[in-house]
Image 1 (cartoon, rainbow, N blue to C red):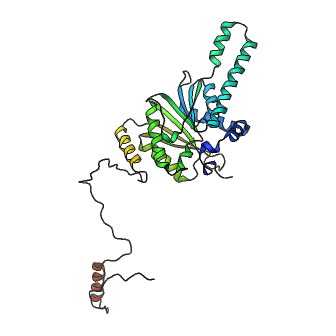
Image 2 (tube, rainbow, N blue to C red):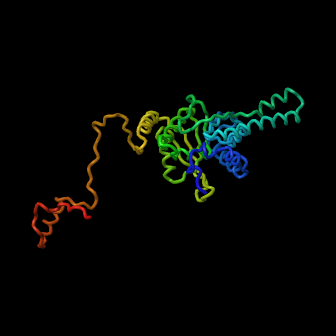
Image 3 (cartoon, rainbow, N blue to C red):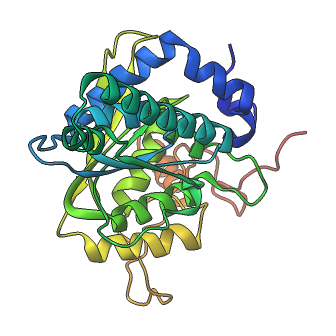
Length: 313
């Protein structure tokens, strides 16, 4: 089975039929719940008080439902409208079921009102493409999770889309909307090792600290990648310089030293190194002189000595 990322944009792949199929699959629901619980565990949230969590690529709201059970508030965003419609129906049906249960279990109006407030959905939904950045105020969320969505940014579905630029824009905005001291856990499925490296590099370039946690590394089917990000408080200047560099030149590879200014005066130039195996004229003359001292027959030096021959046809 081919990867869904290779078929086109996520908004087209997760149409109404695929969204219903995704939400009704008991296997998919079980897998999503397991991954979400693991992501919440890596967030290390204080469950004694509710947190405001951003759910990127929330899909049909399966991960948001787990957050609600843990007692947290959440905001889910997704690029697929059909997925969001399924999530909205889930939240609406849950509210209706809770109202029915309250009427049967408790006849007192005061207790019914308190239970209704407790069981009411604590989530909200938003249609948005994470590759364009996150449109929220700075320091809005206590934490962030993402389940099986980040790898979509590694693919280009249009001429104007560049994976490195989209990843840099996403991580830069995520760095802004998270509260200082917050964490982000992004579970993803990289197609190749290069994709995992690209995602990690883009995250660290904007100032995040952390790394990739791999569960079941020896299993081809059960392997899960979690990008766990936290704040590096001493890297604000590095983050701004990296963002400027990353967005201005998408093809530029990450470097250990960032040059943000237009002028490079005073910078040390790398020494010019000869290609391995190419012998200079000085080396050939010295070699011939050494052979003469040993008494061997050596041809005299001419203007053609050590001259490179033309390439062969």
